Length: 98
Length: 98
DNA sequence: AATTCTACTTTGAAAAACAAAGTTATGCCA
DNA sequence: TGGCATAACTTTGTTTTTCAAAGTAGAATT
Image 1: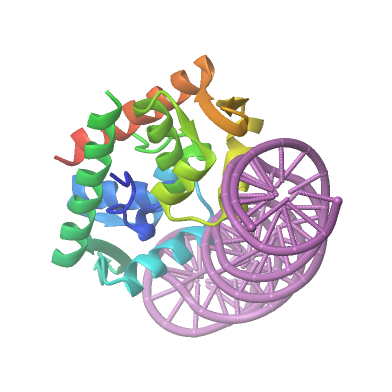
Image 2: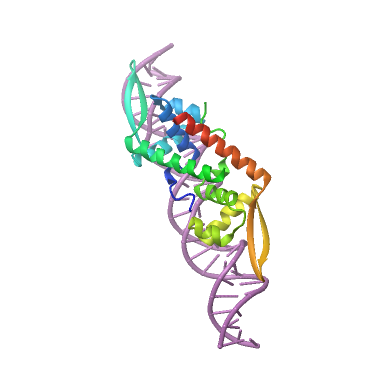
């Protein structure tokens, strides 16, 4: 009955929702790409990334493009699962409403 | 491209999402029903209701059951529209991810 | 040598969420 | 009629979260 019990608190926020979907749609996502995509400041994005990292939903990969540092992010298996569950809960809610 | 630009900030929060879907699924919804459905305290629920009211997404109807006061809530046309848009944006995001 | 860029971290402020207690109005029961 | 209960809040104050701005480190570019 409770329409929200399966929603994940970590994904409550627009920006984190956006990060997760960007990470799932694109295989390679770096900091600046996300920053511009979502229109957020450095610090703000970094703190959202940190919260997703702390939840073990994403991993950071530090590499290079040529000789330049390049940090990319990817979703962990548990992050993928958690996000899928969240989306399913959202869909279930939407189905109820329709 | 930006996956979140059409999401509505007012509906960012689980509880407000739950309130809206409960109001759309059930024709008559009162305070205590919502309170128990969502598992929140009086004050917390009241403040979420207030924010939805201030956004003109819901209306309060004060009535009676017999001689007892009974406050019911319903979604306004603009609330319905805004929520539908939000759900559509969510669905679009989900479609991208799938 | 100085500036620029990337990817942050730190700091601090503002906003939001929340619980608990208080409030008002009515109802019920003895 | 007095006392307790219930509904639906409001108020108060704390905690948490969000966010921008500034600072930083390390590499690159000029």
